[in-house]
Amino acid sequence: MRKAVLALAALLALPAQANDAEASPTEIEPSLRQVGQAEFRYLFWDIFDASLYAAGETFSWQAPFALSLEYRRDFSADDLTKETIKSLGRLTDWPNAELARFRIALAPCMANVRDGDRFTAVSPDADTAVLFLNGKERCRLEKSNIRHDYFGIWLSPNSNFPEETRKLLGPASP
Image (cartoon, rainbow, N blue to C red):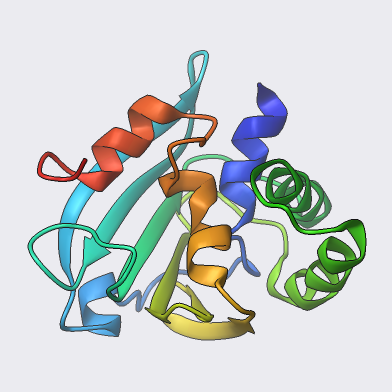
């Protein structure tokens, strides 16, 4: 279960910085509004708080959205990277070579994270994920259908935390 929690935390982890001038997801992308939120915990530990922002009244895989995580614990970059790739391997049909290529693209975005850091990933289109650390752009990942594959760790029906997924998707989502 700890590895599943690390995987969830991993996808948006970027180098830790002071978060004094943090921009909110709606400042990053003004067309978005919050549609859901969830607290991710493991046993009695707070892991992170997540919020989902959508372009319309409800979440849709076909429209831009953003997922924001505010970390409540420290995680190492190495653990986060490993668990991200492991989760993508479980949730997607990507062959090992494709997972290895994605790991190379993702690794520069990762670093140790600390309590209070906020990472936001914006999906402006189906093939792009733009990652922000405390409101500052840090990384752009481009891959066919990355929207569904990458964000599926939190938002797919097969996520490791279905109750939290339902809360993120909001009350009006299926």
